Image 1 (cartoon, rainbow, N blue to C red):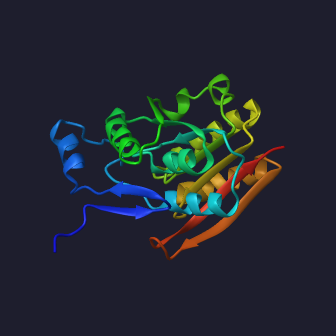
Image 2: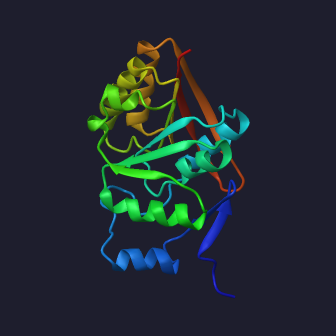
Length: 205
């Protein structure tokens, strides 16, 4: 029996690196440059949280550091959200669109760095999500500034998930000192995949 080249989780079809469509994109030169070479499990932690605490239908969602876009696509599927994914690596865009097509969902993609997300831009969204985006030391400060701009712009909630790397710990500390409504949640999953980490949730009324 041939090993499967895709799996299903949280209602989404997820293609792996051996799937013929993924291999075709790589052959065409779409080689990820900033850790966007696969789907990272912290996204599942946010999906599980949103499943337990569903947001309103039709929200405007921004998936930052979106990679292959599965977290944003989950929001589109389950909550009828209008989703935009941004990533500094333009090469992940085709993988996002491949998964959108595979799952018969719509999600837009833009090549932007975190520093390029202005208050005016962030004001277009109700919910911001980001998974596994604190992988370099300098990103703690970069993501904190992004959260601060989003908070000032009136974004209702920002959810960041991470397996508790040091930059994430710094981000949590900065956020707890800067904002009134901050939660840190220990998140664990056994099914459909095994994943552990924490969620940082910054909210406002």
